[in-house]
Length: 78
Image 1 (cartoon, helix red, strand yellow):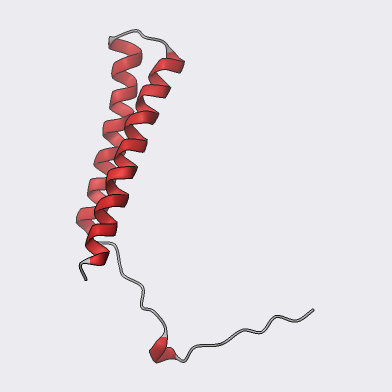
Image 2 (image 1 turned 120 degrees about the vertical axis):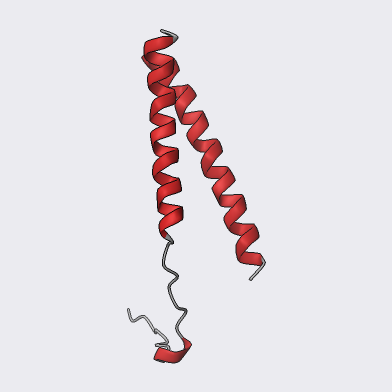
């Protein structure tokens, strides 16, 4: 079995965009915030490990959804 591949010349390849430092700092802040939310639920509210994981996972998925929507809107605006 063979696979035919079209090799694009160097000029036609899509260029990779570098991630700005501000975005990386935002992602790190979101990760710290989600972990803090987990610790708050576990240690302050004393709601249990599984509930704290579920609540922080829900917050993380909500943040991922927001990042996805914002990225899509920004990419369509280019």
